Length: 332
Image (cartoon, rainbow, N blue to C red; front, top):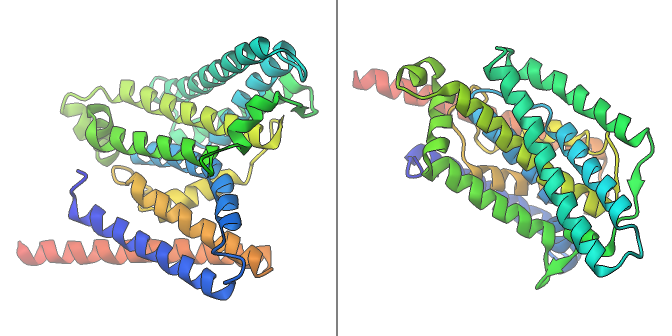
């Protein structure tokens, strides 16, 4: 599927769009936008949204949607924060800190997987539609987070843990390295593995996939476990960058992640999408956001531009689909 001409064309268009936007913003703010400092800043800003977007994209490709990604991320982050602050408070020894970090990260990932498993079971076994199931668990996970924190944010994590969200490796932001690794693994998993291909087939036509011998219910549970795992990774980066954990952090990420996924070429009805396209869409939106900040433009103008890009992408996709339909009819 990776050699699909349609997919290659879509990714190429998005790459050109990202390049045009970068060039435009660099021309408008040549002394501030194309600088190493600004590029590094963008490298710290986009990984969380990028990982959420990949999680949303996977759920959309499977024919569903996961609205609980941000709440699951916050809950996973809270679990990690509780372990960090109780096992290795600020000033603890190196051994205690290392043990607490390992335990906190493992517990956060396990929490994310568990959240995803609950979503998958509600959808595959209880028969609840994905949008309603994950809307309910979104509130459930947020409420559980408030129960665990009792309201106030949890903060003051070990310095070594904060490096996950604020450190650099060879001048490359650590969160950006994590995002790149997640994007590469997700792309390979979707395009080169049997589970990934099954997800796309089920998203295209669930009934046909079932008659083809695909265990759709089992794959659905695994899909949402994967989105829960990705949510936990984003949650770890989020609390490490902010040095605090709270149940309602990053609520704006949800709609932005849906925007990135759809702009990146993921079909909302399921069955089609690519991670490279999503990455270029993410870069385009980040360039707009950072550029408008440099130009001191209104936040509302940035959101207007994001909405305009989304509508333009949807219109372009609809026109391309109509052309393909007409071509097929002419051939027949």
